[in-house]
Length: 376
Image 1 (cartoon, rainbow, N blue to C red):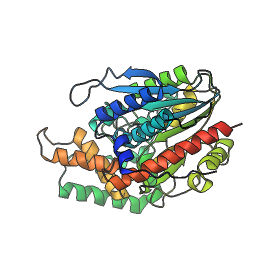
Image 2 (spheres, rainbow, N blue to C red):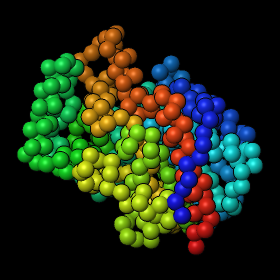
Image 3 (cartoon, one colour):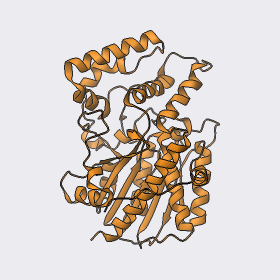
C-alpha cells in the first residue's frame, strides 16, 4: 500500500509546529478539544520546566472505548524530537475536528512522554536516561555493553575546547580503525547501563516516563487486540525524509504488515547508519508497549526524519551531555549557543524542513489508519 506525502502550506506548518514545550502543549490541548477528544493528564512530580512550572504528559483519546484495534502515536521520547511528533499529532486532531473520516478504531495520542527533555531541549529525562533504552525487563537485570567502557571518556569529553574535541575524535577514529564501523555504531547506539553521565544511558530502573506509559497503555488500550504504534523521532536518514525502524520480527507477520502499510522498500532499508548494520537496540519504547499490552499484537516502528549529517548529530549529542555534566558554569556564554545547536540537530527551524516532514507524517498517519482498519 505505502503512503503518500501530503502538501503542507506555510500556514499549516506554522499552526502545527510550536516554538517551545509550553506552546506545543497548549496547541495539542486546544486541538484535542476541537476534535472532541477525552483527555488524561499525567504530572511529572520529579521535575519542573525551565521556568519552574509543571511538566506533563498529556493523552488525547478518541474512538470506541472497547475497540479491538487501536492507533498509538507517541511524541517526545527523545525530548526536542517531540516538536515533530507534536506537530503530527496536532495535524491529525485538526483533521478529525474538520470532518476527516476515521475508521471505528481507538486513537490514543501521547504528547510529550518525556516532558523534561522536551521542555529543557535535551534528549534525556530528568535523570539523564535515554528513555528509548529504559524499557528493558528490569527483573532480568541490565544488559552489558563492555565496549562502551573503552570509549566513554572520548564520547563524553568533560572539557569543551577545540583541543579536547580533536583528541576525542582521534580516539574514536582509532577505535573504529581497530574494531570497525559496525561495532562502533552498535556500541554507541544499543544502550549502556553503567555510566550515568554517559550517552544512551538506560538507567537503573523504570523512569517516571516509563511508568507513565505503562499506566496509559493499561488504562486506554487494555481491550485492544491489535495495536498500530508510531513513535515519532528525528535525526536518522536523509534530511526532511522519513526513515523507518520497524522492530517487529523481520519476515514475520508484523514486519510484512508494516511493509504493506508504509512500503516494503521503506521498512526493509539498510540506510540511516552511514552504511553500518542496524544496532542491537535494548529497552525500546516499542518493547515496553509489547509488554504492557501483552494481550495485543503490536505492529509499529520508530519513524525518524533526517536532520543533519551523522558527524553533526554526534557532536550535538556530545554537546547535550556536556551541558549536563561538563565544566561550564551556569553563566558560560557557550551554553546558549550549544543548546541551540542541540535543538537544530533534532528539530531544525527551517520552514522547508518542517513542511516536508509534516507532509510525510500526515501521509504516514493516514496510511496507518487505513492499514489498521483493514487488519484482519
